[in-house]
Length: 88
Image (cartoon, rainbow, N blue to C red; front, side, top):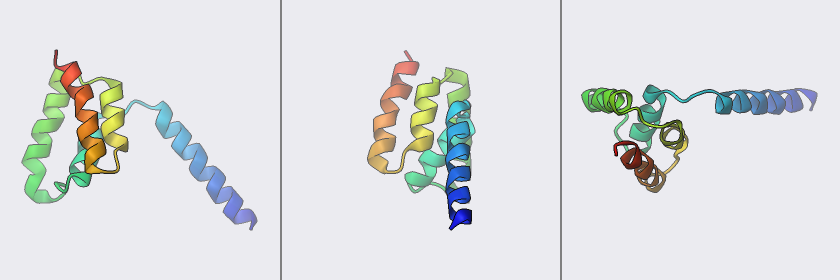
C-alpha cells in the first residue's frame, strides 16, 4: 500500500512540474495530431509544417498548453481559437 501512495505522489509531482514548464510547439502539435487521428508517419510532413507555423507565428503559451492537454477532437477544435487570436 505504501508503494501505491509513493507512486501516486510521484505522479502528482511530475504532473505539477510539467504544468509549470512551457509547452513546446512540438508537444502541442504532436498531441493535437494524435487526438485528431494524424499521429502516424504518414502525416509527418504536415506536423512539421504545423510546428514551424507555431514557431513563426509565436503561438501563445495558452494556445500551446491547450493543444498539448486536449483529449478530444472537440477540445482540439476549441484550442484553435487561441491559435487564431495569436495570428492577428
